[in-house]
Length: 341
Ligand code: F6P
Image 1 (cartoon, helix red, strand yellow):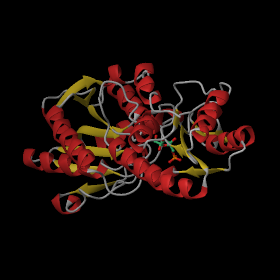
Image 2 (cartoon, rainbow, N blue to C red):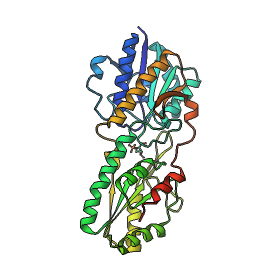
Image 3 (cartoon, rainbow, N blue to C red):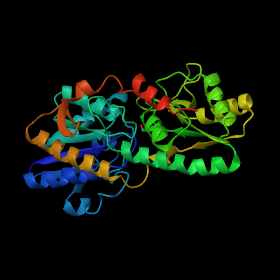
Image 4 (tube, helix red, strand yellow):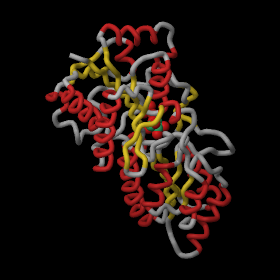
């Protein structure tokens, strides 16, 4: 029986389980057995896996997170780990591996594929910052959670005549903040792609209050920079060299309170945005990506990644999708700006 592997790497997100389920279902139709590697590349390095039969994927469609577990393990950061990955392929006679992840996990997939390993990629991230795909699953769920939180913050901000700064995930891309801000009617939206002008922010808030509004909601991305600098929780870096962003909400709130005199509070949404059940959009996208991934394996289209182009699921070269991030363009931000203040 042919065997194929599957792994989920990087930050978890809603929609991973629908991909795993679709991959298992389609692989079974081909008569292939699926080995589910535990905790991303770590499981491949250590040859730790579970057999995914139809029973193992039953009932997982609506579940958030990943039944396989995940980690930010990078086989290229430790001597010998790439050889261990290769051994796992040989030992299990893997016909192919489906790697589900963001830029880091897929970056590893791309490198290994160039070394001759049969890998296809499936893009995931709540940040929606991967090139060559209109959307990644996880984003829609995170966006809807963030929007609902902004709705909730409105009622309490209004009752107390407060400014509330809401800090939203997304790393160096402002997609979640921008779209949750538009959908939730935030009064100011600040994203990493556009430098913050604190005077402009305070003028917008003061202007609202002059017009008789008694509260304001400021949506800020965790990756928005102050004076050209990231605001970080620690200087420690993960295996892919990323620092942990966070804290801009508090810094900004202090500045706003000092400059405007309005009482200001902060809400950091954090991992709430990544948890819980996927939306219908993310379940469908994950399912379609999983089905396409097996089609790519069947056609030996290794080194490719599945992608969403308009309404179509297509394949692109992993290489094309990596290397730079998909960021919010200025004209999209300008649309949001119409509603500021
Ligand atoms: O990439 C997804 C993401 O949720 C980012 O938006 C965020 O910066 C990061 O992961 C948080 O990572 P961790 O779960 O390791 O704290």
